[in-house]
Length: 546
Image (cartoon, rainbow, N blue to C red):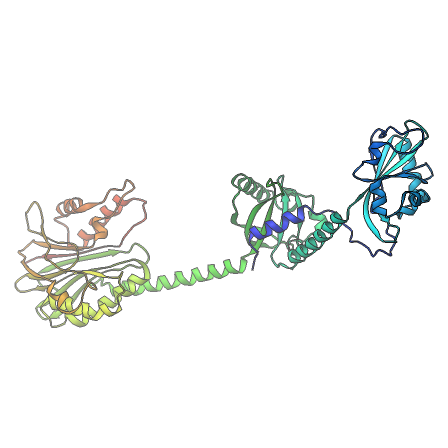
């Protein structure tokens, strides 16, 4: 698991403060001086040295332990703080040399100090000081030359740094622990400053880019990656620094073998002890295999969709059974590759044909599967039954146990008597049935009461349905449609509406039914334009011919 950037930020904040620290040695081991004496230019410090050679009141009251020696290192005086530190009396201290007190000092060091002080500088070293009982404590020693009011002298200021050394040791242990964690994490981790210069990384990152840490630290993204990718990383760094928020994005990154890998990149800023933003930490997660798996899954999904669409094409009839005294046309355009709209023409008996249109809530594969169930239930129920109300009620009884609360089906189903040209129909929460009389200026909107399939069951559902009957004369038509036609929306947010639908029906009066429904849908598609279709569009037209 890739660690959270917040955790890594805390870790790397500590790592960014790493300083060299040496663990405390055993008291019996004579330590080597921690570092070569650092030389800082400064004028000699003056303490108003009296002719007697002993320190004055400033010397006596210094907070730091102080030893005054001649140029050969023999102790000439020690302030109370030094005597307390070293556990010597003044008389005992005056019989010692600085080399006996400062463990690890030697003649060479003393000469270096003298040479530095001869050039009017002071010298700072870290060493161990020895007490009278032989125990030692770490100290920071500042050597200074006193040249005022008498013979030249050396003054050694000694500060006990045990607490600091213990803190450094703890910090060293923490750093070692943190570095162990960093190098154990399998994901590549890096951290860099605000200018984009790499300050460090873990072994996984070294392996990822094919370079050692020494080859990475001090470099920028332009040294490690192709120019366009480096520019992308730099731009994203600037966004991160400005926002101060965690960042997550994908990029295709070349790795050590020259292969391009898909990486999920998580970045965060990290701050110093004062809360100031000082750098960026990043974690890379190789998601190549996941992306390939997702692509394969998408391809399989597309194949499944194509198969579902082919099946649905078979389920939605392109050829209709013979309907005497009628001209029939129908079309359906799914909002996705498959849809939840359904239309059908079924043979009820020798003189009757059933006409159905339905709209399943939802879109996509789920709606298509429910539409298939609806088709099966209707065809099983419609044969031999002349009552649309009973057919819809039976379909509701079959489907309702499998419908969740948020699923329902609106439907209009009618039985057309081919001898009398009478259509008896029932509406289950569907759009109104449009009946257009030959030569009429406006259609009749038939809207008998009824609820959608799935809303209730048994008698409650059946009693909510009402049947109506309409007799069609030659040239009269009825139009079944779904709300995907009237509620189709253009870029301006305007709906196609019933008024436009009725206008196109008037304009296409002389066209055959099949051509007529496609002309209607052509106008709807033009109205929508490039806007993605929001719902399935379905039409079923029945026109009396004799």
